[in-house]
Image (cartoon, rainbow, N blue to C red; front, side, top):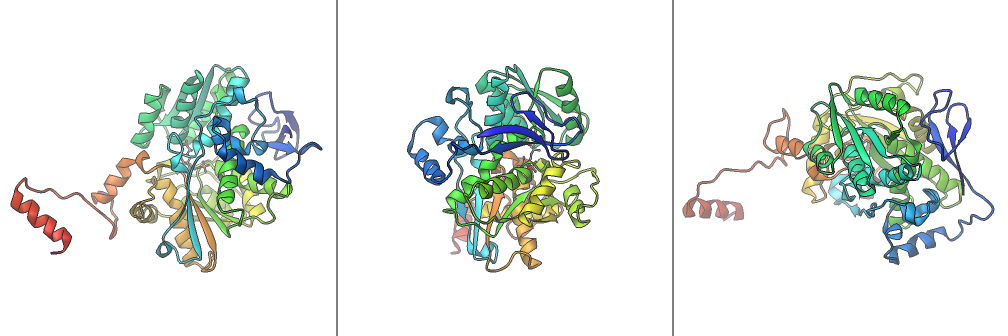
Length: 426
Ligand code: F0G
C-alpha cells in the first residue's frame, strides 16, 4: 500500500512521514491509501482471522491484526499493549424494539476507552519520527491513553485538560501514568487551541484526532465489529459525537472497505450529540449549509465540546453513509446509561448517548423494527464514578425507576434479618 496525506479541501498531497496536521490552505488532512499491484485483498478476511490464533502482540492487537488498512510499520516499531481486543455484546431484546441490538464495548481497552486504538499508531509514529515529547488536549480519555502509551514508549507526555469538569477516573490515570497534567482555565475548546499553538512552535507531537494518523487506528473499531458480525452488515451503527474523530474514522473505514471490495454495502451512521454540546447536530439540521461553534455543557463531560476539529471530515462520513445526526438531553443520556449498566454491560455517560439516541431515533421511526443495530460504547463504567453515584443517590434533578441508592442499616442481627427477608420477599 502507498500512503500520502491529502487535503480534504483542495486535494494537495504531502508525504506521510513529514509531520503535518493541516494543509497550507488550512484544510484538514486525510491519510490516502493507494492500492498497489502487489496488494491483494481477495483473502484478507481469512488473513485477519488467522492472526487471532497467533500469540504475537501485533497479531493479538485488534488494531494491528488489520494492519493492511492501518499502517505498514516494522513489527519492532509498534508500541502496543495490545489493545482493541474488545467484545461485541448482544443486548436484551427489551432495550430497543428492533430485530437485533449489539453493543461494541470499547471501554474494554487497556486504558478503558477507544482512544487506545488511535494511540498505538500515534505513539508508534511519534517514536518513528524521532519525537521525545507528545501532547494533547483532552476531556479525559485521550489524556489517559496518551499518558499510558507514552509511559510504555519512554516518551514525555503533556496533557491539557479543562479546569474541573473532568471525570475522576480519567484524571487519576493521567497522573498515575506520569503525564505532566496542565489544567487550563477554560474548556476543552480552549485547551485544544492552546495545544495547536504549542505544537506549531515546538518539536512536540500533537496526538489529538486532528492528527490524521491517529484516526487510521480508530478505523479498526468498525472493521473489527463487522468481522464480529461475520461481515453481515448491520443497518445502523450508532455512536456519540464530540470532536468527531470516530465519525470521521468510521466513514473512512467503510469507504475503504467498499473500495477495496471487502464489503459490498455500508451501515448508516447515526451520530448522537448532547443537546447543549450540539454544533454538528445544528449543522446537520441546516443541511450542512453553515457550521457554528457553541459553548458546550453536558454531564457527559467526554463530549463537552463546542468546536469539533473534524467537522469537515465528519460531514463527509454522514453523506457517504446516508447517515443522520441526533441530539439527546442529559436526562436521556443518564437514563439510557442506567439501562445499559443494569444489563451488566455498563459504560460512562458519553457512551450512553448512543443508546439514548437509538431510542429516540426508534421512536421517531428512523430506526425501524426490522433493523439490526450496533451501538458504540466508547468508555468504561469506572471512568466517571461521580456521575453514576450522583444519579443513584438522587443528586441530579432527574432519575428513574433504576435508581439504586445504598441504604443505611443498623448493625443489629434482628434488623439485618428483617431486611434480608424483605429483599427475599418473605
Ligand atoms: N466518548 C468518549 C468516552 C470520549 O472520550 C470521547 C472523546 C467521545 C465519545 C467522542 O468521540 O471525539 O471521536 O467524537 N473524548 C476526547 C478526549 C475528546 O479528550 O478524551 P469523538
